[in-house]
Image 1: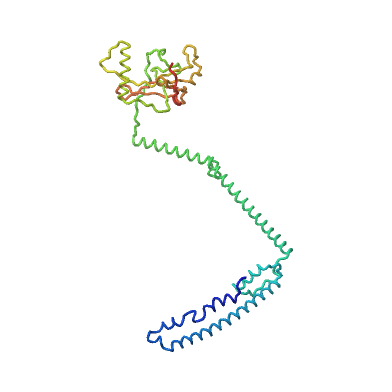
Image 2: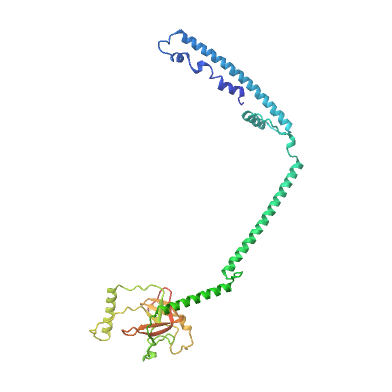
Length: 358
């Protein structure tokens, strides 16, 4: 059972209240000097203080009784207010909660009457009104969203017109183009006048056509489509060529040259030899000089480049979008000469694949 209000107040106010509980006679005597501790008035003073303390406790006890009675009155007033409000089916737990609120926060003077509570009909009417207000708010929000979407569409359309040059108004696309062309023409005239005023002379180098070669075209091992007077061809390798170091390369080339001289019973010349590193051997498997027609280009789809004895790269022959002129210097002069005009190239963009040299 929960403790009552009188028990709680008495336990906290009356139990520690008597003077002997606060300070004993011996402790009170030790508060005086040693010469006066044995004086009889010390004990008399302690008794008088104890009597005054008891009178105060009696007053506190009377206040506790009065507070308990006031609490009962407040509970009764609360019960009457509940009965008047029309709220039924209040269990003991609810009553305890209400009693606790009254004890903690006091009794409220403004008691809610039964007229301020909704009935079934009034509650339905209020709910219908709330639904109507919500529908109006939704309709207004939809209208605002429609206006915003139309503004966004207009902005996107204007940006699209700006992107594709469909500008509106007096400054249309035609005017902009005319202004740009006029500006370029003015710039060209200004550059021309500046060149005349400062007598700027552009450097010029004589360029001569290629000389007529007396070599026999049948000696060129390339297909007829790739043949040029000097035998040059454009080869594109999409990768890196890893050559041996200079010392090893010269040693290998020297051994190859010596072996060639021995096989041909030729003595080396005293002028020195030029060492070259072979990169591979070109083969056109679908091309036959005797049977392939000049207009047939099917053989261009497959070209082999043998690297060493056990690796092969597969490529193809492609026509250049624009022919490439190979220019070289004529002797020690500042004149240039067209060496070749290349119209096709051989491209190898795949990795080497192993082959059997059997």
